[in-house]
Image 1 (cartoon, rainbow, N blue to C red):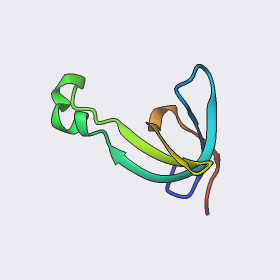
Image 2: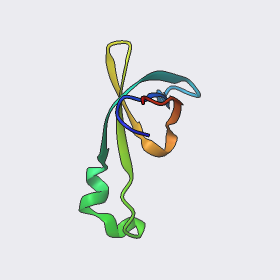
Image 3: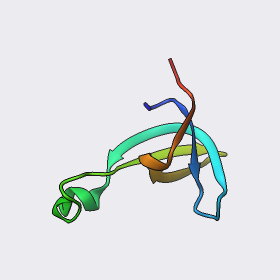
Image 4: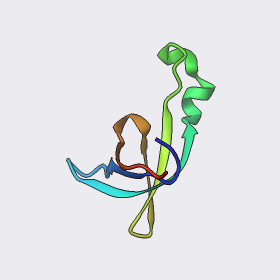
Length: 69
């Protein structure tokens, strides 16, 4: 998964998902500051542009629909 890929993420409203272009991947700031709570694992957050809005989700919940080459 990389910037420019078409991805599907949960919207947070039930089982609804949205599709959009992946525009950013970053570390979860809470995990960076307090990484001892989860065994040193840092979760990744992605930003997705869909319908003119930016949605955020954990990278683990995203599904790649089409890779940008």
